[in-house]
Length: 338
Image (cartoon, rainbow, N blue to C red; front, top):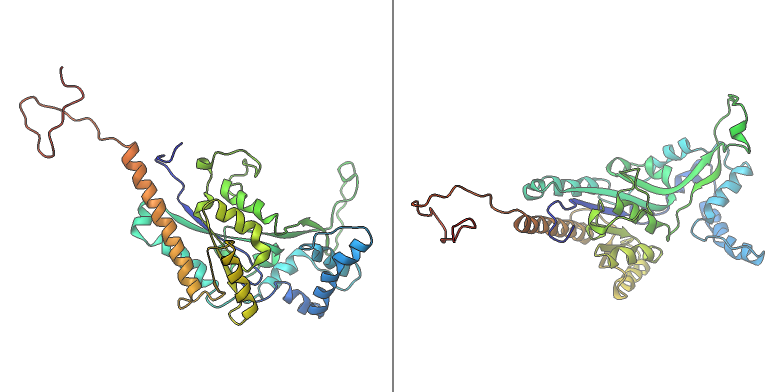
């Protein structure tokens, strides 16, 4: 297919980071409150682990070592009976920045209620890609508005060695997290951008590593907006901007340091713009995201119309020798006798 292909992709995707983008802090806060743990102490320990392990001759992933430390707390009996169901339940306690989750629906309605966009079957989808815990995000108030939520996952009651050759015995035990099932760091986030791009999340037969021509992908990256809070999202910012998408960095409205950090990201070309993590109509962030969604939709409509003009010809009509043309300039028929 070429630029003039008639049937073009018609989906806009808003892809969101979670912690400090949609919520003021880190999503694990309700988990620490539930177990009456010192949240600050936990993160201080996590931040110290890479250097400690490095001194022992071991390298760890700084973005996700906190998952292992959570497992250490479980094994030590400090977080008994922690399972995925509890994580999802605790996700209900997460409180979002002003305007959320309503803004997610407002963006969908912006596309859905526009007559021109509707005529071209345009839709908008929301995705979350987080280094946090997927089950907590799935339990939150924003989950119903999302097509997919990608994040770190845990395995409960892992199967033992040789489980395939052993008879199954029903053992009634209370499930508890024991292993990491999915680890998402800031580089792996880019993988999920391509999953959304190719449609892996909607079409199981397509693998993220499958070769698919750009024009055959479900959501072109140029139809994406990526909204996140800072430097740790640079790999995704880079992929999205390089492929024509739009990137926005958001900051705590009360943090001068985060404001300066966002400004640096724009000055160095990492993001298209930045704004406060305020998603109410008065906010520049609300207005910027809404405007970019409209611009993407307008471009898609223009591409559709252009394809229609290039690819669809006028049907042949009956010609009468003695009957003059009813309208328009006189044209010589392709079938006229020479």
